[in-house]
Image 1 (cartoon, one colour):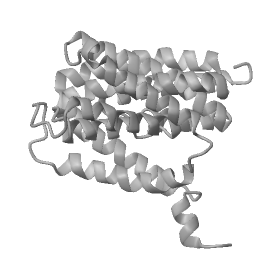
Image 2 (cartoon, one colour):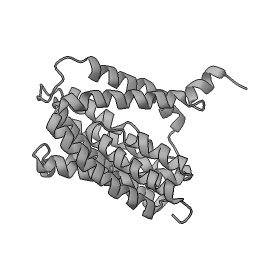
Image 3 (cartoon, helix red, strand yellow):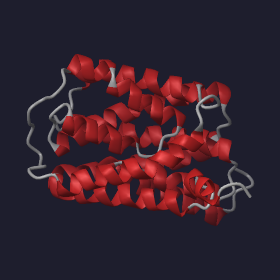
Image 4 (cartoon, one colour):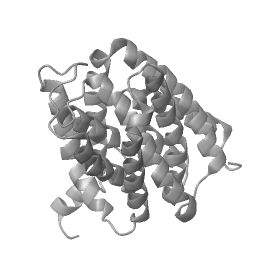
Length: 263
């Protein structure tokens, strides 16, 4: 903290607020905060740990806001939140064993596919539809799997939860968003508990950004509840495309390294 210039600290605080606002509506807060932390000169390992500290504030804030309006029942959904936490903890614990290059290579295609689905799928609104998988099966499979991804890599987790809730659980867009925030909180918490023991965390910076993200998530979730799918859907598409472009624009992306071949 002592080494961070005041103007960079202000930038990170604003990044936390904006990330909370965007993440509470469509996910993708990590797309904002991780680059901001790296630009501020925070080492990569500390960036990941610190990002989990501030991210948990945003997901908790949005979860509380949605629960207060009845869009998610915390008591009945607690088992799913626990499964997401277990997945997040396992992912964070195995970060050194799973090839991150593979995830960075396949992520752009997955995010573009999600963007196309939400952009062109007809009848995609706030109404619940036919469930294709039981809640029990959904909670035992896709919830911990996506939580595992959040712990091991992270960016795009909210988009994956959204897609799973809409396509498999039959949730409307607003209900899917509300439940996504709860599971995001679970996976963030699980990963954070592991990072506390195995990673480097800048606690003061994480807490400052976390408070700002909490406030941003309150504003974003209220706006999402007022406008619904008309706001969530286009913002989700935009976030997915933006993150895919960011990954593909990186010269160090494994895709370009493979295409260039050996030096």
